[in-house]
Length: 279
Image (cartoon, rainbow, N blue to C red; front, top):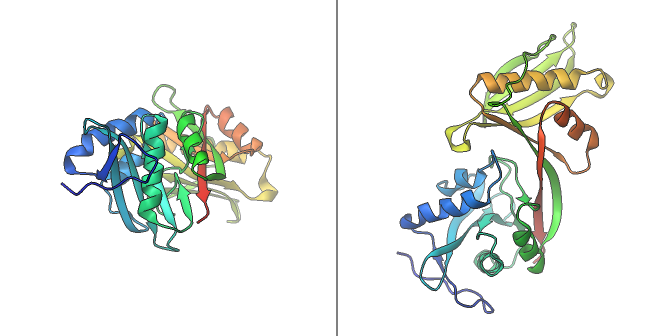
């Protein structure tokens, strides 16, 4: 087992060390206790070497009995060397979460830090679900982090309420490889581009969740129902390719996009927030 890590001053009764193979089950329990329906990006990165990260480490905090009480995944972003707290989970116990944040800060050193995010190539929609995890949000703020970006997280259950068949005109569908999924492109009769959507395919690690990465309609074609028709095709395509849920996000405050999703049966689950701390 790797040697213990000294926690920063001000943390009492807890110890820290790198995650060991025997800790994986306990860490997965921590992740599952915090994650939102249809969203488990932390599971995807637990065994990963960290695509887009120069270094990626998972550290655990243990209680006085040596049991894993919290875990944090952190590393350095390859593009600019910024420190990333990709995720952290501590059952919403303030002392444990604060210890995880202090541990990550000490591990990453004096540099710009971002919390609850990952490199551009990370899967899933980044951000802390601040509504469901108020203690973690409070601990980050107490540690000097400030919200820097927020987006509303929506989820559509495709299993209990299957989507209707799409209406014409239908978008052309092209498979894409990175990440695996599809691009749906709608063109006019003369071949001019009208709208595009990008879907991330469901995988076993995401419990059958597909992700709507993008849906954009050219300005001159808006307010004609094109976005609604393209979204319906996305729902149907994801469902017919094994997705049980379709997740989507919109920038916080984007009322038209939120209304489009709500009209298609999506439920607003939480606001996902990325945090930043200056050196």
